[in-house]
Image 1 (tube, rainbow, N blue to C red):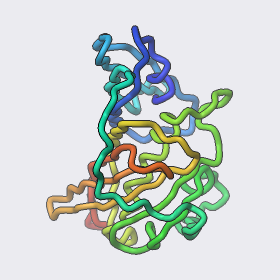
Image 2 (cartoon, rainbow, N blue to C red):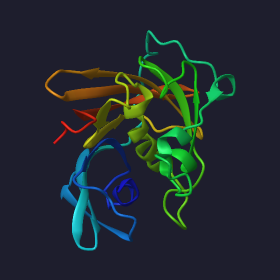
Image 3 (spheres, rainbow, N blue to C red):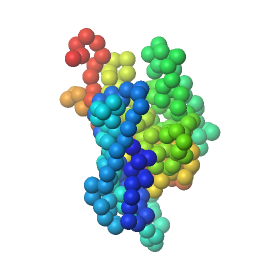
Length: 233
């Protein structure tokens, strides 16, 4: 969806500043089609919608806010930001435990990405700081652009901060909202994530995303939380 949004016709050069993905139902391992339309044209701000279908059934929807790309002289920012060490100083993660006994099946989070963490993200509760890298192109016969890279990896922020034991709780994100004030300039994308959960069974995962040059945006995800076990509906 990020790929077709990025190629939507625009009257001036534009950059995607926000994409909200609504994951409407499970996406089957079948050929997918994506249709795209400009729902609000403009020279400074434009809104583009993409719909993903599988066998004629809508499985996901994305709404993107695009802002004109200009050259604006700005003062030096004053950020309270400490850049994490590079990926080479982090620890590789092995996530085969997430394969649910089906290690013979290729999985995105197991096979398509490389994860390096500083504080055992994905393994222990708490804030997660990690680096992520795609191992493969996202769309066949198309180079993976920086927008496609960050849009694809954004979903991993939900697991980067594991505040609940996944053996006891299910926490599924039905959406992903990505904000970027600039696009990444490196194959590695970093995430500093924290998740908040409530007894209502609703949570929010919040992530600052960065690359070796510093912060570049944010990812937020709602969480539907349920306990594992026979009492779960």
